[in-house]
Image 1: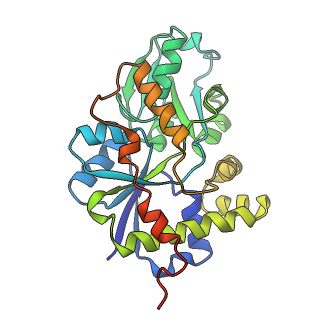
Image 2 (image 1 turned 135 degrees about the vertical axis):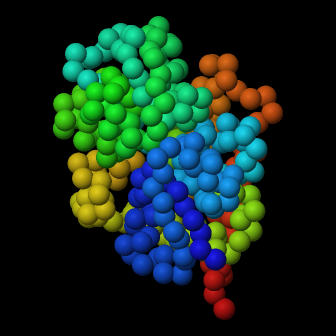
Length: 283
């Protein structure tokens, strides 16, 4: 069985596992997605088995009828910043601007909404898509500001689009992206084997000198964003409950928390625990 995975940018744990040969026992087909909406569509159509995505997406995706579980957290955090065109240097300057988001009611867009609301700043949210698409919209002048993460944040800075706000300084416990899978593959050996490979990548990364890890990410396309991506990599695949609480609190503060959905109930640690057993895959 080939596992089909969609992501915006390949996570560091995957790149480490691939580089070190840990994925030789797994068959994984990778697809770069253009938006979280496309990820949801592919999951509902059973065209993808798992996605690397913002953990908050589980709220809206579950409401849409998808039966999904969060089985791992593949980043300690996601390095995020609001980047804007010239002349927009503060949050107040963003008033009335065209602000690109992936989706209006889920994911990292809610972080921007909370920050801007607290600052009393109203913007025109424009649905553009994933991080690469948002960078392109910013560079092309189609929008004035957006949230960007590695490596696209550094590409924006290089092109003259300065960072207005460091999201991670404001929310130090912001959880990184998670590995979300369809519930019907939770018991599969393929998923356990894949998680074991990712865990091996995480462990190897902990022992690898920073310079070596950053060089690997540069070779894999992270370019100037390699250092920030390396330092925000997962040190464990276990989901941090503090991050789930933070995301829930943000939704609650925006009056966007579904009453029937709790993130902790959509988190299933069993596949990762099974993958961690020393006897897994051995005769």
